[in-house]
Image 1: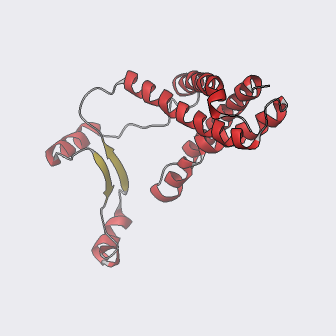
Image 2: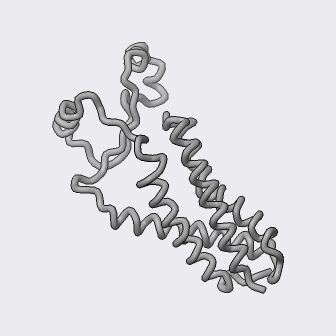
Length: 184
C-alpha cells in the first residue's frame, strides 16, 4: 500500500495535464459547435427578462407528478417546445473562474484516483499495472456523470459521447502520469 501523501506530485501533474488537454479539446477541437443559437434569440431574451427568473434550473413546460396526468399539460408537451434551461447570474462569464474551478475539479478527481490506487497497488509495481487501474478510475471520474443528463434531461447523445471521448483521453493521460510517477 502507498500513502496518498506520497502521490501528491502525480495528483498535481495529472490535474495540470488534464487541465491543458481540456482547454485544447474545448477551445480548438470538437466542442466548438455543441451549442446552438435560437432562431430569434432577442425575443426569447425579452420574454425571459420580463419574467425575471432567478439563477437556477427550469423545466418548460413545468409539471409535477400530479399535474403530468392533466390533459392540458400533456398537450403542452406534445406541442412543444420542451426545454430544460439553466439561468445564470447576469454578467459576462468569467473564463478565469471557470478555468480555476476546472483545475480544482481535476485535482479532486486526481485525489480519488490516487486514493483508490494507493489502496490497491504496492510501491514499485510496474507502470502498466498503475496505468491500467488509474486510467479506468480517471475515465469513470471524468465521464460517467454526463450520461444521467442524456438519459433524463435531454442532453444530446452526441454531446455525451464526445464527453466520453474526452474522458477516455483524460483517463489515458492521468494513467500515464500516475504510471510514470508511481513511487518505487
